[in-house]
Length: 133
Image (cartoon, rainbow, N blue to C red; front, side, top):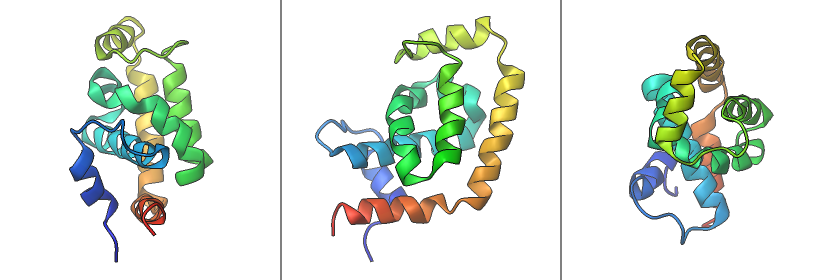
């Protein structure tokens, strides 16, 4: 069997991803999303570095994990307006200025339901395997 999605993520979590193909960058961005929301919720994801790759994750989610995931992250990203800031300090300021606690709490609950039912690890492992087969 090929590499597991989390082994793949460990290889590139703190590396420059610019040389990777689009699908691999999307898989890694989705892993950023899942890792950071599981660690500290949407607040933590957007307040710190994880949210830097949100637009890449949004682009890959419909194809890689489905519309439920894409809709959830897309809704969360929309809270920050257009253009979406790639600067964590700007996003943190918006979080603090807009009292997003209740909104993030709802998004967290919806995320955890998806995490519990979607088989995301298997789908993402399959996606990275397809790039190497």
